[in-house]
Image (tube, rainbow, N blue to C red; front, top):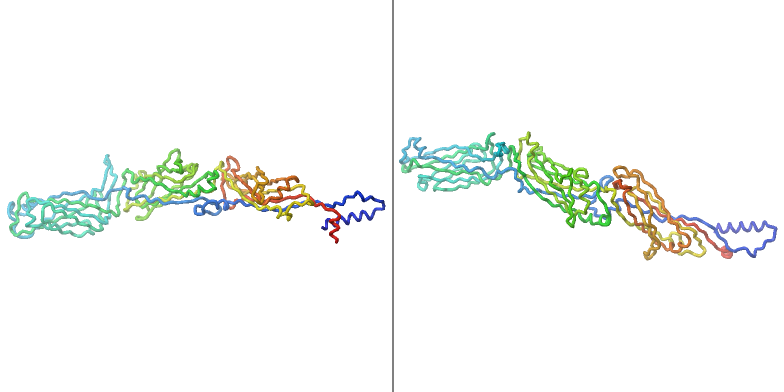
Length: 561
């Protein structure tokens, strides 16, 4: 009203200073003034955190200023399939005690009757566990120095020829001179073909350097009342074997060329992530997926872990293979544990350079398939020949997939954001009155882009019923300045205005909200997209109104009433 009043005062001053008659009959009674008005509507923020709300938090990890999709799994290799060496039984030994010859050597009558008394005849012989092994060329592939056996069964079968065991039972004493943990065993043999199964407890056997022999001592004791017949053919034959051996630890040199274990493993991955709207409705191609193998090994032998393939399979059965210099396989060296009974930790890191992991995500994978085998390392065992095995041997593999939000230049994604833009509320005018003249109404978009992508936006103006009033396509938002790694180094500003003339302003005045539909792409065909947590696209929207108010002197006069 002050502007209106000033205008009237100026007019009165002009009139009062004139001495010439003036005809006021044709003077317009209209009064008006012009103005320009800027009204902020609001600001839209597009951040990585906002994008991440479209997927589950459990598979998204944040580290410093980066974020990535993440999952892991453990693969416990079936130790029943691990065949390094067979310690389950020793060699069967058949020994014969020639009673007739021994009695003759002792000066007893043969044939004849054994004089009354007790007669003991010791027999010493080496028992062969038969653990050493050689290839077809005679080269030693397995040398066993010592073993710890937690349990075993000693099997004995005694056959007698021309010895009346029923009438004159024989006492058989078994001793283990080189195994101090085992006690002396005594058995009464009272019939031909008698079998003995004796369970043995925890013990250690130390073998000689050139064989897996251990000494046994068997003593046969005969008790005669003077009527025990002895013939030249009298003898006792004993079958001896260590059976059902449960080996706890073995030391030596184990260099058999056979595959120790061979497995196929299927790993399900979090499909919810790839089925989210962020990925299902867009094309986000990870440029450098990271897959880590952490292999824990308690086998004291240098070994080769051969990955025969890493395969991604989608729900329709499409497959993609990792690639190692044109081959689907690679070899990971498994070192011996530094401490006996401990584990060695062995790592393999696969990425777009080593393994072409980006190929695995050219499809939407539902599962990974791993095929691998483990064998003794021929490289190290040429010179490293001191090994050990703890049973059961354990090789556990832990797989971690880490997919940084880094995408190749052909990737894109789209999103919508809604901004409250009630023009009636913003201007304070519920409808465009006749006395209000709006010559121009501009909707101004001012963007600051610190994302490694350029954007093309469409602004859609909606009324109270969400009906489209107006659409403006092709709003260009320049990418931030991106370095070779795809990281934004400098934010870039962009401006765009939509200009409405007086004829279209009445409909635009009904706007209640503006929907921004945005598609983002790489800066160019060569620029990677490496998103950081502090990356942001900020778009501010404001109204610029230019016009005036028209009224008349009668209306102004009412002001002073």
